[in-house]
Image 1 (cartoon, helix red, strand yellow):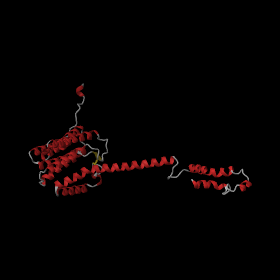
Image 2: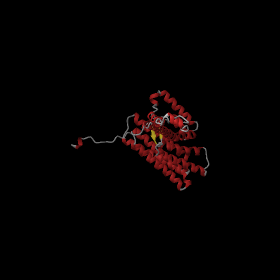
Image 3: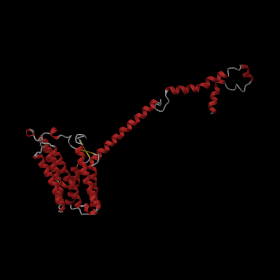
Image 4: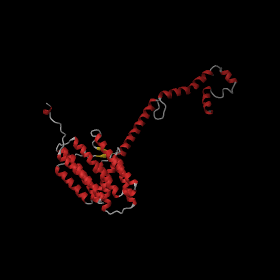
Length: 320
């Protein structure tokens, strides 16, 4: 009876996983070339892995061949191509000269890539799809590989300052991957919906022409700008939040001042009336107390009647 039941099988599609395998091979090839001292070829292999990584997901969506196996396989391949490979290439190129500081920087990068990929897999459908939470691992790998490619292509001498610059760049890329800085994902552009296929092809041709003018410099500068853009967006959001918080606090202070009867630094109507009545009380009560003596007594005592009775409070105010 159990033989008639359909056997569960996991969907493993050949086409998108073929691109993922090519991505994995490019990362492994970069490590092999770095161990052989061919750093320029190793850096180019990492950029090839980036192109293949962008294609496997798009091919899976176009052919409707997404699967849980493909997602996990893609994460493992990204860990090799964009986590281990860039760190080892940079270590073999410059970080090895720094001793323990070199392998510490390489490990920070590897750990950042692993944490970045794990957080990305658990936050799918939770965070805003327009932005990445932290620097994407392919962009971080492009920073490291672009630095290596640019240095080798321009034959920059192996000074100690170059090794420390590689240290700073590697640590920055590792920390940026596990940060909360929002990096633009490009998914909100939807060029295929806004542009015709002819215009998309024209844009791609212009991009290839621009990059091919000087690939090491152009690619490195592009990813440097992208690697800093997330922190700029984060600072802009933080400033807006601070301004909003300050405006709300000022409004609450103004509302509290209105509730206590203080408006624009002046007493309220009830308070001023009370003070005014209090000041007028001596002027009202004084004539009543001096109304008893007769006019003749005031004539007999001229020193008492030097000023009218109603003017005495005013003289008392002047003395004080």
